[in-house]
Amino acid sequence: MFNFHSHTVYCGHGLNTPEEMIKSAVDMGMSTIGISEHYGKNEKGEWFWHSIKDPKGYYQDFLKAKEKYKDKIEILLGFEMDVQEYDYEKTYKEILTYNPDYVLGSVHAYKDMFFSGGFDFYKTKTKEYLDNIIKEYLSYCVKIINLGYVNCLDHFDSYKKFYHLEDEEELYPYYKEIAKALRDNNVAIELNTHYFFEGIYEPDPNFYMLNLAKEYDIPVMVSSDAHSAEDLNHKFTDAFEILKKIGIKTTCRFKNRQVIKEPFNP
Image (cartoon, rainbow, N blue to C red; front, side, top):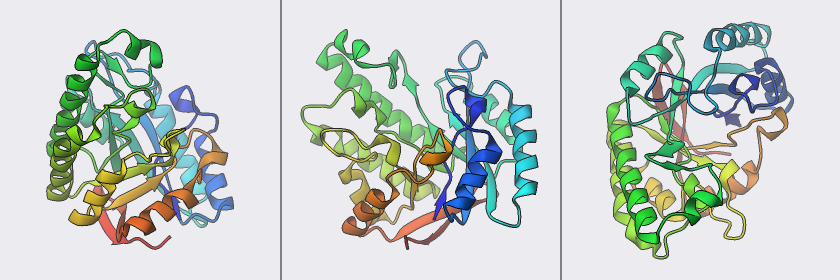
């Protein structure tokens, strides 16, 4: 068992240090732990939302913890790159200065839609506006994959925490284009157990996308998007059951910013 998507005190809303996250992974019997702090900037070059404010401190703290626990668990350095619509190449080059093992790709906001902004935003917009911008956003995900910067597309259905299209099938062509791009670029997709949406019990990504992952043999990376040490294996059992029922055969690990496919065997 492993988790490549976890956050620390360095993002401002994580509860534990890198060492505490690694120690918890050891205690849980994980084979690998990846620490992947937020990294993204806005159009003014300012840190975006919960992006890391002290990347050098994070990096040094990570290296110390990695050395301390190197004989107990495989420890990888990652970043969760917030791929904004501006200057993502510069952001990516900054990330590469830390020689990460992998880069996760996420979009927390698209145009004026902030996916973690709560219900109030969605109440101020028309259905037509929201439906159209979500379709634009899903097309943007294809562009992100094709850039070649990221190794895994993370929680791209997270907007569903606050909004659903009445006819989900309208989005199926967009999901299929995302799946093709993932396959053609050898990029994984994340099953994020942090976003098991209450009431509908729908995973992120949705069941249609997971079936496309099976069809195109796209590696599925189960993660908890942990912001505390105790959540490193949050709802992993539920996620594994979903993947087994669908028939997912492939997961992955990361090495030198490459996706290494391996059989799904929870």
